[in-house]
Amino acid sequence: MIKLNKPEEGPTIPHATTGHCRLIKAKGKIIERYDNSEKLVFNPIYRDEIIKKELMVKVQKNKCCYCEKLIFDDFEVEHFRPKEAVIHNGKLENPGYYWLTYDWDNLLYSCNKCNKKKGNDFPLKDEAQRARNHNMAITNELPLLLNPSAQDPEDYLEFLGLEIVAKPGVNNEVAIKTLDTIKLQRDELFHLRCEKFFQIRDYTHNLYEMVKDDEELELEARVKCIEYLESKTQNDQEFSMLIRHNYDKLRPNLI
Ligand SMILES: [Zn+2]
Image 1 (tube, rainbow, N blue to C red):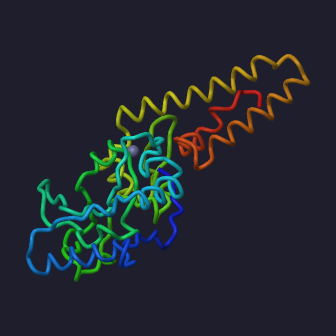
Image 2 (image 1 turned 120 degrees about the vertical axis):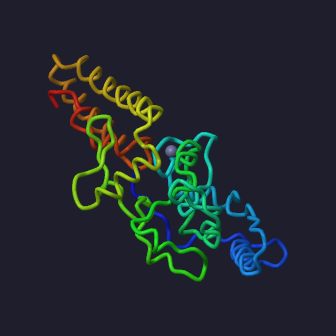
């Protein structure tokens, strides 16, 4: 998980004839339904292609907001604060954060697996502070879940080899709960990270081994290895945090 640079304002989706923003209208409608004690029916406009493109391509560089896996086709618009219900003491409680369904701040894009693991979980330090409806402030909440568009996950989490763990320190509770809620240590991710790690390590080591007895070529290989490794640590690369935290392990010994 890495910090996402999300612009403060999201895209607007104007209505074809009236020109009014459809997200604002949908938000007004869902609040109205709540106030009238009607069944909450969600307009799926929050997963409009305009939103998906802005989040997926521009903000998240085609990667899952939680696990940094590259996006193929099993991705979903994720509500950081769940829209329909929240889990409390293992039980599903309605409603969720219905009024944030269309808020840019609450939208992320995640892989299907992270989305399912997180589900309606939104753990708080103090359940009594939970905002139960649109008249209550979410600013009183202390979430035990990292929001990669608001916090830098690398202040909380680190890789020890191929294992992602909580950094020791004051933020430990948030880090541990985040790892557990999204299951960032799950087998599927461990295998994918292994694949990426060894693919990069084999490339740099093979390159270096081939030329290490030739002084001129060796220098070239050193430069090429470093450039290659640097490119893999960039935020648009799959599992960039893993590569950054394992940089020294991925360099051939003599570089
Ligand atoms: Zn994911």
